[in-house]
Image (cartoon, rainbow, N blue to C red; front, side, top):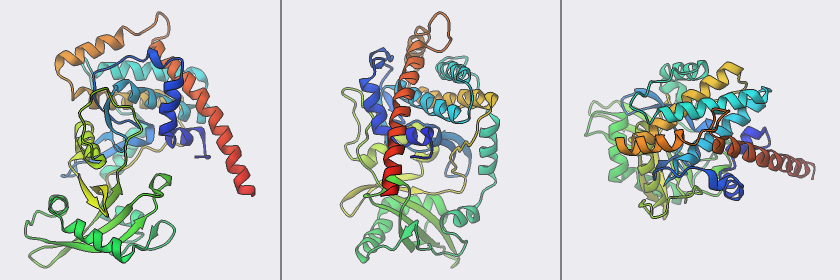
Length: 377
């Protein structure tokens, strides 16, 4: 998180909502129809996602914070994330202004009958092309360092205890995980599925203190041939995103995430199930080589605006598919009516991004100071 302001924004979801609630612009946000939202809609949480048949679309790829809430929260978080990425690329503030205009225009267009598909930017096309060319060997080399069926122990993967191994074996033997594996890795319904290897997965600060396992499964078919697949077992926790008053959502955190994923990102939602492990609510997700995040080291002016326009359309369509025609038209009217007289970007979105960018920048510098002091100690 000390790497850049953009990294700090990505890793600070809870503070984002705290600071948004305390902001003078909090009451200016339009109240949209209560639908499933990502809850943590930053740049890194969008990217190519393959469905169970290998077809790839750009969708929201992380739904840990999903709730039924105000869709305006997703667009503010996306705009803030893109703004900090743009500023990290040493682009002038006018690019941020034009980018936020593009976000607003593209997002609003998703709720009209004349919705036109936004062409992907060069950055998005490059990531999507890379995703289409990936196979099991690429995933294996990234996740388990080799195409040989073993998870290497080290900084990223740690040995599991006997109790954890036994619990994981019970989990893989459960009907819902067996069904997921059969759908994902073989068409032979009589295949034998078992754990080939398993390790605790230290994957970023969000996994610390929680259950997170990489599980290499072997699927033996009737002809005796074995296939291998990799699944991610991750503890689900309560969302920090504010839910709409009276929203009817599953109480179980993993079931909530699966429900949100199926509404927002069908490609991902169809490849995950909710389960229990060691008394905890967990998500079990098939990992595919085509799943990639959009990583941006540097934006050009044109790429910043084009990427913002395309990604806002992705989020808009994820929200729109949950609404009937009348609700889409009503939400579009609210958004269109919130524009000012000069800058095309609606004042509520512009002011929210400016206020939150300032707050996050100040907090980021304090974070870096604390990090430096701890390093020196």
